Length: 135
Image (cartoon, rainbow, N blue to C red; front, side, top):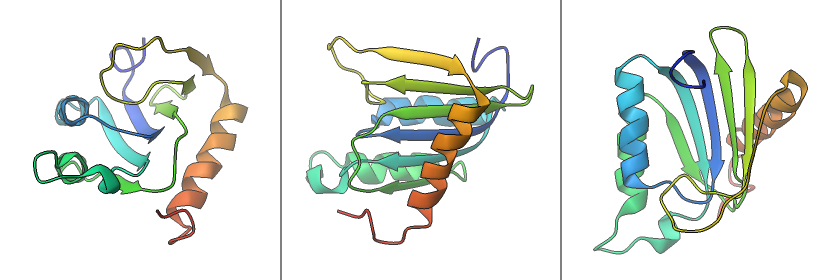
């Protein structure tokens, strides 16, 4: 089982939105030594901020307090990569964001190094893109 039976050495998350509660859960996993490194590519979270709902800054502050990298881009993809200490490279392709919602969502979970490496190149390219994919 991902996250409990194996330590996540590197976590890559591409999602349109991240909930504050989910960011807190990820930080707790980091504090417990279950996740070592992570990067998060989100959608236009900054554009939906209001004085009442400051999700972007709350989420970014929580994740960056763990030493994780997070940035918002013109992104709507939902892919999660889990590289574990046992050498597994799990890929979760989904329709779900990293938050709570009452919708029907679809998931495909695989342990496939080729697919993992393909998506990992996406994360590296986006991180190094500067403003190319910015809002």
